[in-house]
Image (cartoon, rainbow, N blue to C red; front, side, top):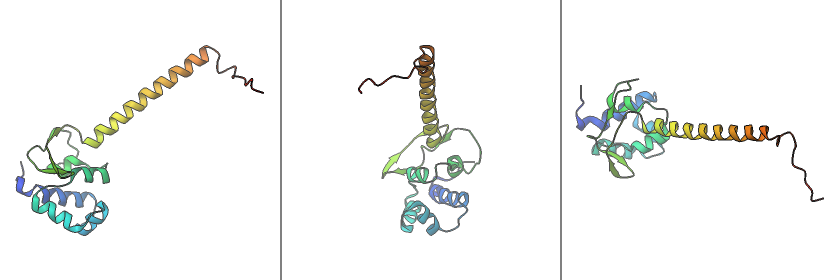
Amino acid sequence: MQENNSNFAILFIKRLKSALKISRDIELAELLGIKQNTISGWKNRNSVDMQLIIKKFPDIDVNYLIKGKKDEISEVNISNYDISVNDKKMEYTTQKCLVCVEKERTIATQLKLIASLEKQISLWEDSNLLDHPRQDNTG
């Protein structure tokens, strides 16, 4: 069942507090490093600073916060909601949360680096460069 867009920010904030096991806006504001009236503003404008929330809580289940469904890997379409990112309206559709995608990119990059280094070590071992350390002839 699709939720009414006019309740998006209120439901999102309620779910966020539930996920963090807190109950008051002031507690959430303290965790986010913002003033409580910022959260009130989100509710009034029906928008949230998604970038801040993901940055502060990278392991949070964004799908749950947006749709109210836990552990679901279905497509998340939030293009109908106003989501504030640095005071700019952002629309996107994604199958994974942005933090997960970024972590996967970082891991892939690190795996490529590891493979490259392993290949270089193997070449050095094959050419016996590791068995015969370079001598310093400056002395």
